[in-house]
Length: 436
Image 1: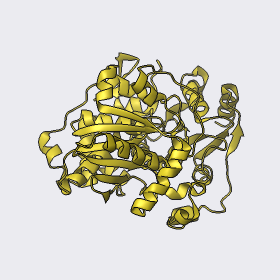
Image 2: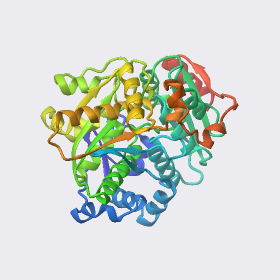
Image 3: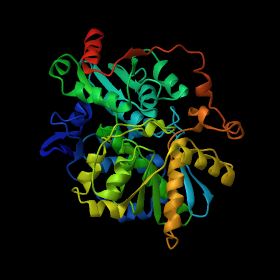
């Protein structure tokens, strides 16, 4: 399977090149030349397969010929070694828990798969791989733990000063070894702009072998399809066969993976793009005008993205046809006050604690169901992070119900190893060149 640039479909490269180069030089994003349809027999019998078995079947189809099947299976069995359960809260309202991996966030799927794919492709004696990643919260922690100790790799994580939670910052900054963290005096969009500028800088590319671990890297996106298929498998076991997914959306890689799964044959009735105050996509779906804007800081910080990179992939899948997009994707946007209301409502109704990102997805699902009372579809909202990452958000009576995992307790007291920098590219470039 080859992968093409969204800016020029004639530019096509093998999967290995797409993984290591991450971003085409023309500034587009890589997408598979063709999207395979999985067999109806497989889709209809998903309930008979485990998560790793589902992941292998999906991956071997979309990566056809890129990695020998025996090796691909070994990569998946190592990377996807944790569960992603669907939990029923009420009739036709389910939560997909994606926080059971090492960094307690859904991005463990992409980061662990990608790190192992890169390690597989790296050969002894090759130039060190420098992984650059911008994070608004959870990506950095997942990438740090996914790549920690991987030979011949070095990870540089850029995060916005004062805009990640204390636990998220600990996950980014206390690892050492081959993991470096830079605290940027700016927003996530500024961090992302620095990473993108580095990829097209001639001098940096001459000195370093650069790649990205953000969801702009196709190796991050593909494994995120796995949990959509697996969630549907769990519904089938409960006698449900129609589904609506409500997805907390920031850089739009998560929902982009869901739409890729739909393209591969997963029968999804509707996707709900649930955003915070950074409402670029919901506004586009409502008005037909796409206008990126500066990001706004919110309680759901991992979604604080004003110019979502992955939207170009989604638009490409629909050939920029707004009408077709609107048939499948409905946008919702909520502010911080509504987010807090939703956290309290979920706790009051189900005695269940959700992080601020997850709360927004729940609220969007309930809103959609209210306006579609005739629908018999099961609604699944994605829980993208463990609530313990956001202790300052919760009222005391909710906070006491959160069970903090041992991995978080082990980080307490560890010193931060981050480096402060401004948001100018010249300073970032000079730091990279001086610390190569």
